[in-house]
Image (cartoon, rainbow, N blue to C red; front, side, top):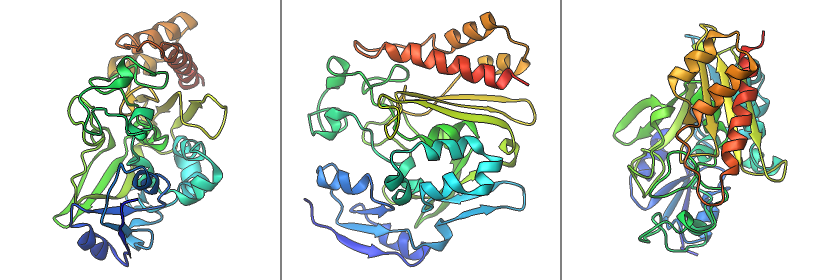
Length: 321
């Protein structure tokens, strides 16, 4: 195991100062990062524990009606927080579906959003595009759990449940570094393998998530998160969906478990769902249209059927009164 030093950051400035090195990584709950270190997939010289950084912790309502959630906030806190459950139930449901109670009580929001893919080739150090290899062995090998949308040349799927709900809720990500802060929509936070192979997000080496902000426009909307798993519980999503109808009538539909990032359904389909008054044939047609570009691999065509079923349920839910 690669040796590393440990530093418990006392403030945001302290954390950013320590992270100003390509050999330093931010540590939240460590439920994924420490595994990556043990597997030799991460080789930090310094782990900077950000859990004591007050500015990066907690659920805080803001004057404009939005809600700020610090990146060091534990997943279990988000799942049980009364304001989140009341105003953003899709996020609470997604947080409550993460892994096991032990991991939810240890893992943080920032760590969950930045976790690395669970592809078994990558995790077992089989040469692949993400660890220095020249091709994607999943493309022709064991690909039951890989991407049907947005894949190529690598076919990972992003494992985060909250990321799917946050995308449907139009959340923004606050990113901090020694150079300052920037904010961007979470839809722009993740990158496809076709654009970048060495990472799954836009984060630079010296950057870390400080918080996620949920807009007031998405609060108190009709919304839900649903997840299908192989074992029924305590597992990653085979397919998931977040569905939101905002107070202004706009609809958001986002799939998880099917692509290298949360996969938002095209706006034309969302607009058709927003019109309402849909019959069963309309619902089935819209779900099929949403998956027109799906390109399943040799062993994961079942994901197309699962995604279609979840989309039909989500559309019916949004269309019901």
